[in-house]
Image (tube, rainbow, N blue to C red):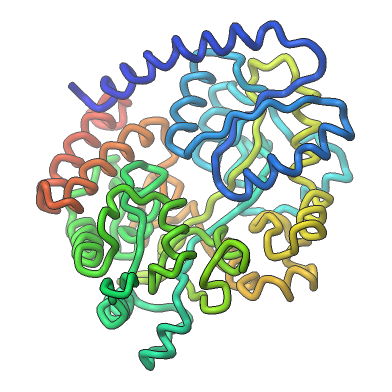
Length: 443
């Protein structure tokens, strides 16, 4: 049975549960909004502060907070079937233009002159737009870079370059790996999923000189750059990573690093504020930052992404939903977080005014590095080779969700040793070809 068939059977079972929830919400009275969001730290903070919006507006908010993979599955089923479970959804740069093209989303380009659209980084706006119109308002933006334990580097007499090579990363991991004392040379995402291990591995593959498909849409997963990149990853993690890393996604690895268990970590820049927050991190005073590592080329070595709030076309509460979007993604909200919780935790990666703010610059020593990483990540040219797609940690076609999930599963099997890297990539290649042929990309 093909992967698409398997996932749609699973999604079909979820439809029944979603319809039951939908019926329950049909009897709501008064101004209410139901919001589906991911369980990332910035979103959880937004949920805490939303009591302020409820007091100001008189609107009651109902929250459905899920892990990233579970949220994507649930939102995809609901919006594809025309369900009305959610009035607001948290989606990203991959889904937004695809869902907008299908008529599933309401434009959000009319929030008023005081919203200051020009203050949002252009690359973030582009990723959340379709045909020049914004269809999701960014809550926070991110790229990827390198976190490292500056105390361990100093003790070992090591110096992290501003932009390390992956060979240097390997050497550092070997020197600093000390599992007897609970420190692993490096921690990376291992949980399978296109938004989990594949997000990171896409940058690794691109910087090794690879691409997802060639100009004829033929998958390239058995090409030498893929073999080299995934071989490097599996070898690195088996030798210097934590045990059980195949179950570690973004939140789990962030917890490992903040607990002091990782000498290095390459991942989202959005975690930086929390890693330096002493109330949430044991290494807040011992963490340094560097650019994302490179192997053979800098192209696609760091991603760019926006987590954003969007309005499903099916909701009858569009204007109320826009009120919340304007509140939660405004400059005023950023200032509210800075004033109440400290500027270190202000939503990053979206607004120029945040990075121009002296208070943020003082609180966030990584600010300039993050801004530059976001602005220099070119999702329209992710590979040094010519490609027919846009997207660094994804390929902006509907079929990629299924392809990415399958690739993530196969690489996970290679990480556990159940198959070799070559076997995993051969299986992934066949699945990718099958999905692209079904989608009409291949004859």
